[in-house]
Length: 188
Image (cartoon, rainbow, N blue to C red):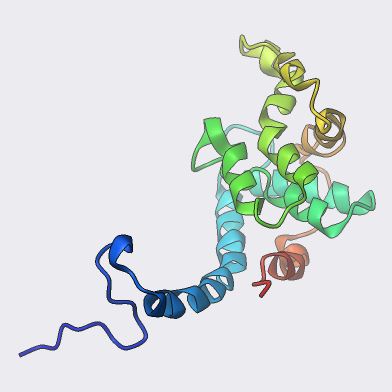
């Protein structure tokens, strides 16, 4: 007969309601293990963007690299550069809601300003092209009272909307890998 009991290092409950402190003593340390895999997953997702152009002049990866490279060359801090790098990471997963994906990945670690910027960059980016597709280019004005309005407006103007230049000499993904690994490393 096969022993179907869970190994000693796993919790044994079938619902949270029946879990115990001992169960959670086994689970909580695993959060650091899972978090240690995030950088690899982020880099892998970014790598998948290399083969997706979506009709744009450059691949989605190249757009992300250009955005991050421009921010880095402009002297932005590490967190801002990571935000610039992964701001469109969700483009191929949920094109209409991609800012939320990147914002959720960043949320536990990013400052309030950077999180808001990434979460809202889509509507701010719309200022540059939505009028061409029948949408309101000024939709971002609904957020004019946000303390991060100008911050996000600047991100799109200086780094995001200009990052489609097929002649731009951006840094390769490998250049940003140590920064991604440091940023998403477990913090406890």
